[in-house]
Each structure stands twice: as structure tokens, then as C-alpha cells.
Image 1 (cartoon, rainbow, N blue to C red):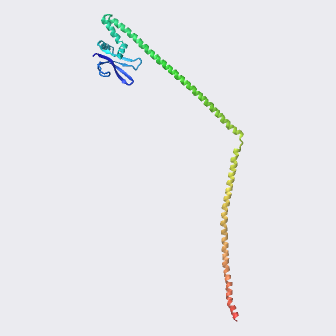
Image 2 (cartoon, rainbow, N blue to C red):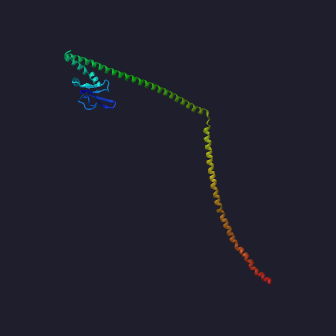
Image 3 (tube, rainbow, N blue to C red):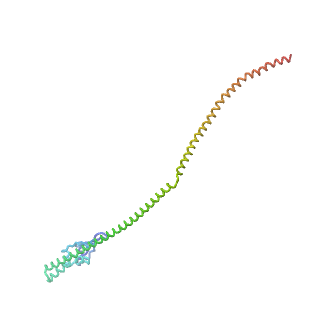
Length: 257
């Protein structure tokens, strides 16, 4: 079985890159290989291709069969065209110098096409960025206009509320009489009268117990004097009582006589 030039997958999920390898056609895709001749990264625009031109050409001349993707890569890099020119030299259609001139012209044309593609992609990216920037600025301006309108409405509402509050504060000051101010004065007078009455009542309450305490003290000596008089009178009464007792026998004697 001939050798085969194909891709061996590497990288992470959804971000793969490939090695361009020469392997046995019976080997698995990511298995053993004979030689690696380049890399292919399709994640960039345009795709990044790093290829050993001479090795790829020699393997093709030795009969290696490229896969479809590798065939497109080799055509993109000019390996197939160079093989075609060398085949013409072998047949004698033209010499090697002519083959080299044709190949150099093809390379210049190919590089011009690649550069034009890169410039077009860069301009497209710039246009996309400019459009995105303009769209974002438009959105910002619209949002700023909406915010300004809301702020104006809020400022108008605040002014109206302040005017209403000022008018409400001024109207009561001109219409209402100073009755609310006199009421506390009358209440203060009543409180002062109540305070003045309380000490008078307290003085009366204090004076009453003083009189009660003084009267018993004044009466106590009178009672003692009365008791003393009674004591003083008792001997006289006893004498009076004793005198009749002395006279009684005398009367008895007279009666006997």
C-alpha cells in the first residue's frame, strides 16, 4: 500500500488544528506516522498553513497520495503546480529556467491575491467596527435624550411641589389669627393658679395637725390641777365626815340622860 499525506487532528474541542503528516494508509488517523511535513490551522482567516515545500514535493514525486483536504492545501501552496511544471520539463516541453519563471510569476500572482483577500477582510472588519461604534453611539444618544427628558420632568415636578408648599405656608400665616398662640398662655395661667392653690392647701393641712397637738398639751395641766384640787378638798370632806362621827356618841349620851 502506498503512503498517504493526510491531516492528524490536535487541539481542543471546537478549536482544532492539524498536523500534515505522511503515514501508512492502513494506520489510524491520529496514529503512527512516518514524517510530519507541516501544520494547518483553519481557525484564522485566511487559514494559516506552514508547509515544508520540498518534502511535500518529493513525497508526491515518490507516489504518496494526498487526501482531499491536503490536496487543496498543496494546490494553494503551489506544490501541485510545481510538480506539473517538472513533468513538462521531463517531457521536453520547456526547460527548467522556463519552469522557474512560470512558477515565480504564479507565486507573485498568488501572493497578490492573498494580500488582496487580507486587505478586504481587514476593511470589512473596520467597517463592521465602525458600524458597531455608530450604532452604540446612537443608542447612547437616545438613552441620554430619554434620561434628560425624565430629569426635566422631575425638575418640573419638584418646582411645582415647592411652589405649592410655599403657597400653603404663606396662606395660613395671613389668614389665621393668633388664637393658637394665646391658648398656651391661658393654660399656663391655669397651671400657675393650680400651683398657687396647692401650697395654700398644704399650709392648711400642716396647720391643722399643729392645733390638734397644742390643745391636748394645754388641757393636760388643767386636769392635773383639778385632780390636785380634788385631792386638796378630800381632807376637808374627811374632817366634815369625821365630825359627825365624833358627835354621834354625845347625842347618844344625852338621849340616855
